Image 1 (tube, rainbow, N blue to C red):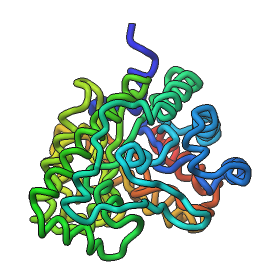
Image 2: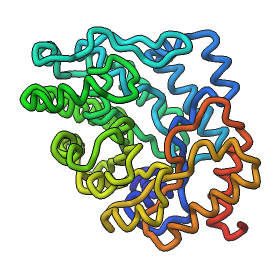
Image 3: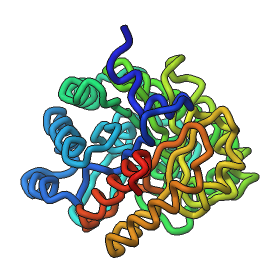
Length: 348
């Protein structure tokens, strides 16, 4: 007998099968917009929270129960993998992540340590185990990791960047060093995602949050082979969601790189994206997260407008075009989710 989650609306949509309703989950669905999360964060730092499996599980399980979404995603951060690879990692209060000893030269690449086991990331594995154990049996759990380019860009820039100058300089000036770095990261990410699968994740999502800074030709040359390598390295039969933001022109290449589901951000219409994504791939997205700050009826209207664009596409998962933003009204998040669920019942 198949596990209860096997025939969930989420996994049916991943397989492009007819489901009882369109599934919906949200990126960053457990976050600073929730008062319960803010209360917890007042007592513990973000990094300490990420390294406490029991708290990670509690945060996500309570969020799923409150929102009524169709899938959970492990509470973690995509940069955690870089610590055991030799980079310092800190989240200063009120600031974005800061990575010590960034990689700027070929010599720096030589000290980047490929992840060979999960010894220093057991807290992530345990967070997956505890989250899976605490979720309702029919709710699938998604593991995740950063895509090679996004992790490389963080490692090179040492934090946020407006022009990715250091990353592109290394990429353009030393193809050998770039290949070594990206290959090590790709193999490490595949190991990391497979460990989450072994711990109980039913699917994984690959986040390429920064790749939109590149043009089409650079993506094909410097990114696509490594993202494809990660996807091809995932355990057979486990679905991969491939998500990137920032440049709609990359959509055909994102589809070409692979994945069972292609995530779409809000910068292009879903129906346009569907024409660029292979028919054997499901589609996920793509409401602008800022729409959730609009009046509730506008949230509902824009959600219905999004759903209408994919009404004839088999295999669709409703989501935002990126993560839920801090200070988003919780009632508006619930309104979006309820609108998706009402759409399938015919009451909207």
